[in-house]
Picture 1 (cartoon, helix red, strand yellow):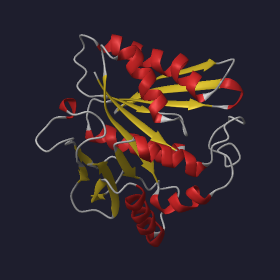
Picture 2: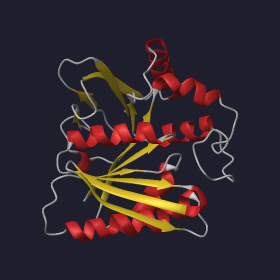
Picture 3: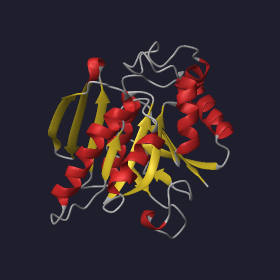
Length: 251
């Protein structure tokens, strides 16, 4: 089973990225994972037809790593078991809880599911026009409202730099609820290219979140299964449209 991990600082960027990817890969299962206050963990599973499952649990020690290890991984394991013999055509797209370190999530998934699933890509979803503000934000993730964990002393910039270093792909998102400023968007894309110079990026025309085609090519001429995350090139593309998306890949 192919797994695609989406990491983000906020839920809006994550939501749009998962919708784009699911539209590009018909038959995908989308799992959105959220850690709320007081150790409440919510896991929502959906297909192109809508939500098919919603689970809620309580963790006595509700940190991001425990939420991944004790709730997300068992949930993905059960989805894989349920899909066996059913010919599920698409991957499982995993939208991590905001600010969850993707490296920790991938390590947990590989440690439990390596014999049944492969993480083909780790995608960082972000809004380019907000990137510079996030990097300069001196507050903690909790103080800025990105996580309910008071003990998490990382800043938004520290979180994003860590995800940029680990992810093989950066997906530019523009949630409709927060219109992007054109100059800020270009400035943010330029900043990403400076922070991650080994990635290449190609803009894409997108009419809506459900109208994008992602062309996967970890290495030219190869399928995602043949190349590990962190190597190769790819792009998002589509016909004429009013909005732009951009995907950056580590080369």
